[in-house]
Structure formats: structure tokens, C-alpha cells
Length: 180
Ligand SMILES: [Zn+2]
Image (cartoon, rainbow, N blue to C red):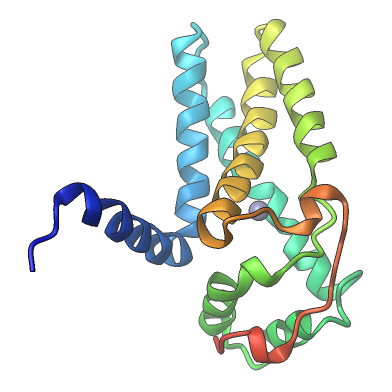
């Protein structure tokens, strides 16, 4: 049977993207740092080592909240228990893979919400207006991190996780989680 390219492309591209973002989620975040640095160059800023360093740090920093979730405020959730068990057995690769395939079931991250999004946007733009490139790179890289996570929610689930609306939900059924 013949399929028109228009009919087939969106579907295959979407499934390709879904596989890629599970495997390379952090690489997509790194791409955010590249985009921020390109924008700063475009706006006439200088790319010093410190600017590049803080853009990279900013693009990953929001996900440090996962560690806080697993070991402090979200430690009782089924999700955290699974991750801690793998880490305790030094199965770091499996723990990483577990998070990769299941992270959209995590609705409890305090940092990932729209107040944070607008806060980092406001601070980033303030630095930008002062031509403080290091400050702008750091905060805008965090902004892109959040925007990518929001985009990914839409692509993978067709809707936003509740944490963006400040509804933090730690309950996840073990049956919904794929093994690491
Ligand atoms: Zn994130």
C-alpha cells in the first residue's frame, strides 16, 4: 500500500523523537545551552569561558532536584525507592535508564513549575538588558531547560504534568513504571 509522505512523516518523526528524547534527554538539555550561547553571540555578547560554563551548568541544574526528590522530600514514593535501590546496588546505568524511560511519571518535582519558569525568565531578561552575559547565560539556560521539559510533556503525553501548575503529586503506581 502506498502512503503519501505527508501522511507518514509526522507519525514516524514523532515516534523517532519519542525514542530519541528517552535516550538523549540530557543531550537535548545541552542543546539548550548551545541555543542560549548562540543567542548571546547574536545579540552582540562575548562568549568567554565563564559564559559557556554557566550556560552548561544552568541547562542541567534544575534536574539536580531529582536527587533532592529521591533522597529527601519525595523519598517515600515508589519511584524514589526504585531509583535508590538501583543506586545502592551501584547499578548507575540502570538507574539512569530507569529515569529516562519513566521520568514523565514524576509529577512531584518542586522546582519544575510555572512560578520558576517566570522567575528565571524575569531574572534572565534583567541580566540581558544590563548586557550581563554571564548572568543572562545562566538564567536563560535554566529557562530553556524548563521550556524543553514542557515541550516534551506535550510531545510524549499530549498534556502538561501537574507539577507545572504547582500540584505536586508523588503517587505513581508501580505497575506504570518500566524496569530500568
Ligand atoms: Zn528537568
